[in-house]
Length: 291
Image 1 (cartoon, rainbow, N blue to C red):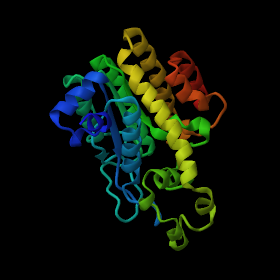
Image 2 (cartoon, rainbow, N blue to C red; image 1 turned 90 degrees about the horizontal axis):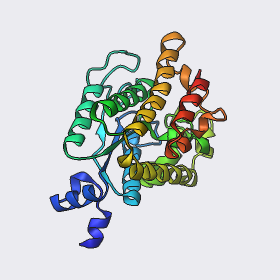
Image 3 (cartoon, one colour; image 1 turned 45 degrees about the horizontal axis):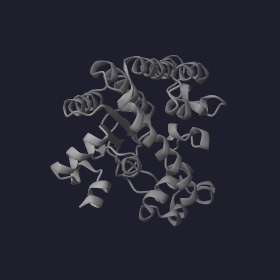
């Protein structure tokens, strides 16, 4: 029984006693986010939420905390088969995802959690903006730290800058859920298989490299966030809002992906290390490089 309690981190699989034990030990909750969407002939349709959930579960097993079941449903999606579009990618209005996340955060707070990590495996620009915006606003509203982030932002310094069923996502899923990648089917895909870049560049080993780094940073944040005081939360909110402000300004004045074009630059790739080290003022500074 002791071993079961040590390893049980998935909310939906817990007995009440296990839930009480885990939240008492570390009152951090992970909320994985994704969607169901075409990811080429070679990747599972639920890739986004599958990898986000798997990363959260592995991080929680390392750090403690509880993982809520993944939310399948986000903003945007390709005009391809087997894709569910809940809301338009390019719409400024948001009537489903934002209030849903707000309610989830409020419920987590009511249940006694002291920190929330919303990890989105779906990378649409609007998805990223809404998740980060809800996190910063609800941090102030609930007075507990809430991080809203795509997982690749925790591996920028490893060279992962996000993609869609490309080398990065395919490698992550290949490592986390090896039965859900059929790399040989790229040969029949007129889009993703038009050259051999994904086939030759993807590997479970690369996925493990990204996974190990993301898990290390997630688990570190999960352990430290519940102890942040008001001053630290305020600095965190200012840092995340600095990035959010640039993303919104770039979208409005230039194009939707304008504030992502420089995430590879020196200094910007240090984001997740600075986040873990709680050097929030430096994050505010690096945000200026995004445009």
